[in-house]
Length: 205
Image 1 (spheres, one colour):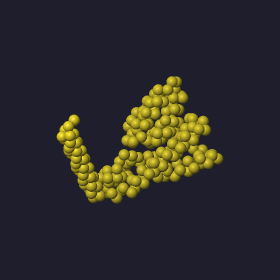
Image 2 (tube, rainbow, N blue to C red):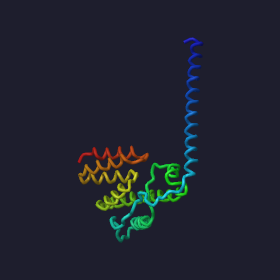
Image 3 (spheres, rainbow, N blue to C red):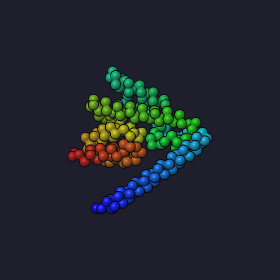
Image 4 (cartoon, rainbow, N blue to C red):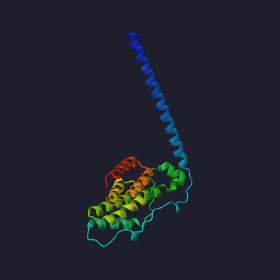
């Protein structure tokens, strides 16, 4: 390759690099502009009624709560009792801007609180199911973990442990149902959950 050809190639690559860099910058600038336009719009939305949103109700009588000297279970029971008196909603995958656009900025603090309650709930359920499973209280663990699925948890351990229970009980059709539920999730954990469920489903019975 001659020196002239070499420098020509270099100049071409430099031109391509700058073109891509400028295009990326323009794209980022446009995205930023669109974001701030939406943010401005969302901050001017009037307060909406949020009383009829799909809140999660906790029926303590349907869960395996009993007198226990186990400090772990005592703490879980207290947490569940406290949560049963609070508003809980799953807002996974919904940005603050989208919430303000839908319900008004005046409701953002409340909705964020209700979503935090959801996070506390699904973590408590996962911990509860795991603890019962480790104590070989399988039927009770199944009840708790199935409640987590009904709440649309995105905690991987909830799905994996419940799938293992179904596998041990030779209930492959229920693992299929878990796969359907997991596939509908709006979460970054979705692919990891699906992969783990597929692995359990493929295990020999």
